[in-house]
Image 1: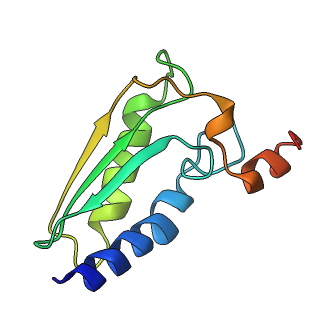
Image 2 (image 1 turned 30 degrees about the vertical axis):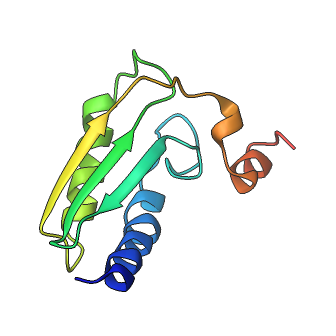
Amino acid sequence: MDAMETGALREKIIAEALRTVYDPEIPVNIYDLGLVYEVRVEPAGDVHVKMTLTAPACPVAAMLVAEVDDKIRRLPGVRDVKVELVWEPPWEPSRMSEAAKLQLGML
C-alpha cells in the first residue's frame, strides 16, 4: 500500500468507523468529541489508534475500545488493529470539533 492508499484508508477509518462510535452519555461521535488522538495506518494495513475517554472512570471504556477495534477491523484493506487507551494528555472540551460544540450548544 502506498502513501496515497494509506491516506485514503485513514480517511475511511475516520468516516466509516470512528465517526460511527458514540459515547453513550454524549450524542456526539468519539472522533468529533476529540477522544481520538492518533490514527496511523502502516503500508501493510496495520492500524494503530490512540484514544482516550472523557473520564478515567468511564464505565463503558472496554466496550468503546472493543467497538472501535471491531469497526476498523471490518474495513477492506485493514490487516490488524491496535487500539491504545491513553490518559495523557487528559481530554478536555477544547479538543471537540466545531460541529460537536455546536451540536452540544457550546457555541
